[in-house]
Length: 208
Image (cartoon, rainbow, N blue to C red; front, top):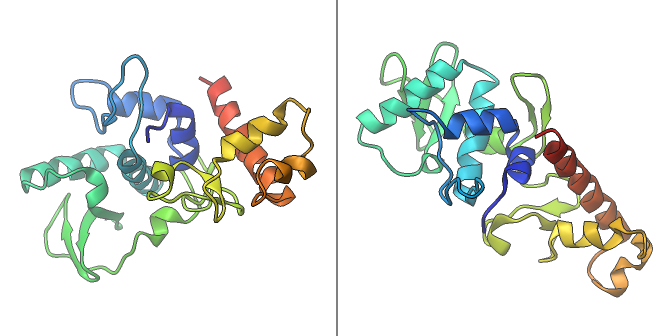
């Protein structure tokens, strides 16, 4: 499954400008796995990595983030960035392995911290103070699961894509209360969340 820039922005908290800057230039921070032509398309792994970068950026400088990514390469850790757990400390960024072992990627090695990806998946405010949605549940009634339609947001506990539902009612021909006739597992509250998230993504697209 590939993700265009608008939904990538909504799920990761990265602005369209940040996505453009981070994938371009002589030393890009993260180039989409699915390429940039004719349009940039990100993988689910890219989303996880970008979500981490945005979380780090809310706590530290982009310069330190870039340095930490270079340190991963210097340490011959060349897998996709989503495979690594990175957290920001007071003065540095740490690569966390296991529950307590962490390596300082900016200053000194050997620092010990406790961390999980829960901090990255949970809602947080980015460096501009904008609220970033919960990654696993961008709305209460929506799910993001890598094993379900490649991570595309779906109605919670179903395989029904959120945008399918949102577009079904967008024309006004089908009221929210009647969506269940087409998708029996979808409830009225599910429709409201699907429409809300679709509107957020549309707003991002209009700001491009």
